[in-house]
Amino acid sequence: MSKIPSCRPNGLQREHMTFRKIDRTAWPRNEVFEHYFSVIPCTYSLTTKLDITNVRAKKLRLYPTMLHAITTVVNWHEEFRTTFNDDGELGVFSDMHPCYTVFHKESETFSNLWTEFTPDLKEFTHRYEEDLAAYGNNQAFFPKPDLPKNSFTVSMLPWTTFDGFNLNLPKGSAYTLPIFTLGKFFLEGERTLLPVALQVHHAVCDGFHTCRFLNELQALLDGIE
Image (cartoon, rainbow, N blue to C red):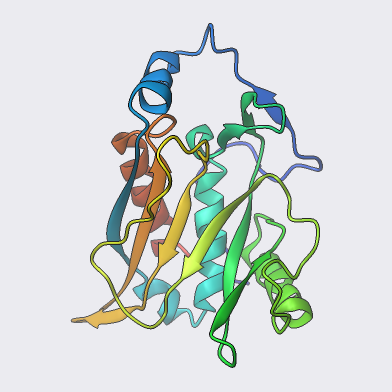
């Protein structure tokens, strides 16, 4: 069975999602948050290339494997799960699920599907395939109902590689969850590389957090058994 090894303590799969409100008066990051959310609203993106040689060697399906690996690391770190609830309160989701794009060739449009996350890669891939079979040909923008609030966005652009990618979110946007964009993989010597862009809100996520995320994601891809 192919699985991504667990490099972190404490299992992340929970029976019920929770939203823990942040006490802004005691939050060490509050001053930084206020600066980049209210004073100088600021998002940023970082684009790099991941080595997926091991993923290809194991003959794993690329998209669900990447969705699983990305979600695994998202669930390790609070800065990628910090957002506002429906009452406008800032807090942290206990866990997240991926919402990802599916392209329709006949209409040249895309839909957003989501798949419930599970730590086991084989089980997640099975759920992904079930969702794709059930909703993949439905051209509605959100064909699968009940998109969970604790979800984040992943897009795939398999038609080209890229060295930079930036989403233009409106100034003052309250959207603080990460957005991932994957490109077309390519060969470089004996390695297979995959472009990936990560867009975050500076109010909740600094360059340190982004770099740590990408380094841990690469380590996961290298360690798939």
